[in-house]
View 1: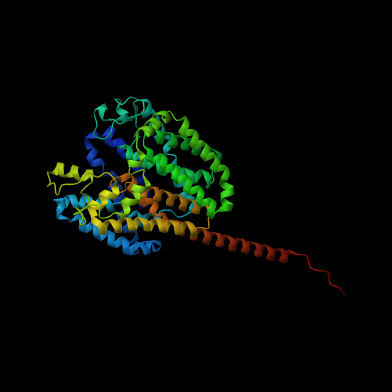
View 2: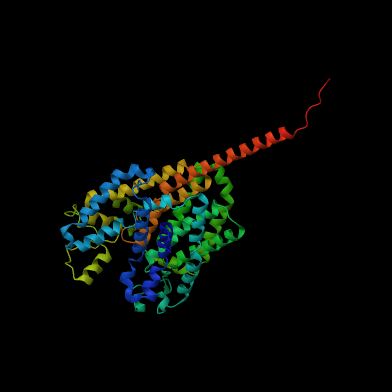
Length: 463
């Protein structure tokens, strides 16, 4: 039986959770091929979607105001994929993939869920994946670096495993590396924040969500990374503060749940077995010199677009991606121009796409922030309004982070970007359904009134 394209999209989202495990534990000899497993699943979904929709408009109407800048951005990426500085066309094609492979989700996600309840059900189920994943994290943290469960993709030596604090392992969960796990935990925290504070459920569901939140928060600490901790704090502050300003009545209703989430998060941080090791690492690091933490450095990353003298034109899409380096080694391709030692993604995007491409790429991403903000303001349904705010908060924390150079973030980013068209459609359907229900009830009342008149006793005739 051929699966529906919607099912293939969901399979792609769930494959994010297992491809790292397959690559580092079960099929290490096929690690390079399995890197593209998600791509294959999503490409099947794209093809099936196109076959089903035929010549109908692919771009959702809600996203059309972004079409001009997005078209120019895609054009620049394709041009940079042909950049002779890359040394080979194969490297350029792979570079184009890094930027655009998950972008078609913008067309699929708005048509993926038919009702609000269907979307909520998916978010519930996906958030619950952190329970088995989080338990795996605890097992990794309790195991020595030499344990097979703590290996990375391609690593066979325990000396390669990153540790922190008192020699504790920085966990990766079922992901290939720490960065992918950090992204997953951040997204799940956003889901849980929304589900617990706004969207209802049974007592069992709520208890499961509380347990999932504990595992999510403690695993953030066990990664040894500051990013998920700061991101969670930013998401919570932004989410609660915006609700308090723009949805005061709803905010008062969700306040008890917000207090519960806060208590669980704080206790989870402080009582985590990784808390001591995490704080030791924090005290050893100079956060002001780390551009991933310093707001000043992040601000400079977006506005100093001429910081690489002589490289304003770009070195080509994918020039700085590790997968491109691996492809060159595997196929013995020309190495292309020498590259700089760059770590932060804005730096790498600027070096690859040049000044114009950099402005267009991040201009598009700022455009999605604006879109999600507008959608949040437009939502009248409280649940959909909260989901819009969650998507906006996650896009906000992802802005300075890795998207092109970290495929896990790429999947989640473009999936959530599709909410910019999905949520308005769901609201219109909710309102249409409410109108139809009101008309049906009015018709039933009218019919009951006619029936009462028909069977009413006739008035006595006066002679």
